[in-house]
Amino acid sequence: MKQNNYQGALQQPTGSGFNATSTAADMIKGIDLTGKIAIVTGGNTGIGLETTKVLAAAGATVIVPARDIEKAIKNLQAEHNVELETMDLANPASIDAFAEKFMASGRPLHLLIDNAGIMWVPLRRDSHGLESQLATNYLAQFHLAARLWPALKKANGARVINDVF
Image (cartoon, rainbow, N blue to C red):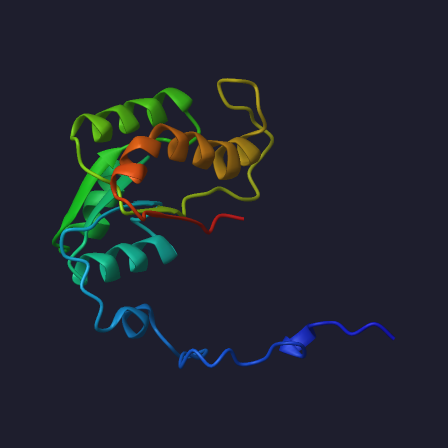
């Protein structure tokens, strides 16, 4: 009989020192990100918001591109080291405009965390005619990383983390 992973039956501890009750703050404890630049898509809600807060608290400058800038301002108004920009991953021109503005700043990009995404939306298409969930959750993330590639290279050891699925 084939084994499955229901209720974590196949999972084994990794020895990392973290467990199911560990928080993002626990994981970054003792890490100084002063002078590092991070972009967190979807960084104004949910897991992205927690990610933004923890990275900023560790000293990173965190740039949060948001589709709804008013919501982003409301959710991040108390945070330091956070910059808000407008970007809609469903709109390739918006991705280009955001990336051009960041590239014009001349800054390196140490962390690109692709967190924003959509799920269970009615069938709709982006400006290229592609299904919106595929376009937003996968193709847009690649488009953004490709446009920011020179800044990622400039950081000399940057990381790109895709947690949209």
